[in-house]
Length: 178
Image 1 (tube, rainbow, N blue to C red):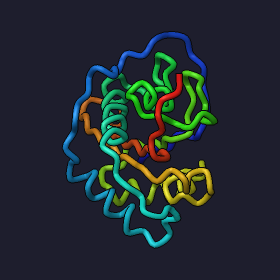
Image 2: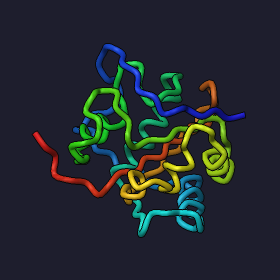
Image 3: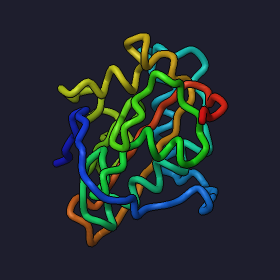
Image 4: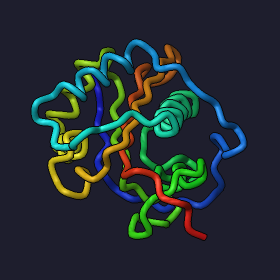
């Protein structure tokens, strides 16, 4: 069975122990991710016009999936209190100023664990009572404007859920504000 994470914001103290801006790593899209992308792009219910795969969002999603597996947690916020908006900004991906700036803010991420295939993952998000369908399909204007996306998959036999999936969508990157 797989689990969903409900969109919530948590505040925890500490610093992030994941990846930093200087660790720019390009990941090849794995077969599971390719299959998810094909389902995502071909869904007739997709409300985004011209969604585009983004290598930076892919890297962040893959790293988040890996980190959750290796650190044995399942949450939008890392054990160090770092959320997805902060991860994107740290990677140099400019988000609109009205997106949450708290360390644990999330306007961009859906998570799922335990699903061993792309179709199972997609269907899990489509059936989620927590609003993941609206996020994945861009069913409301806020997410419809997030036309860039990345999907991350990570498998770890020793981790609690073994299969970790992270979907990130965002509007086209803006110049970072200071």
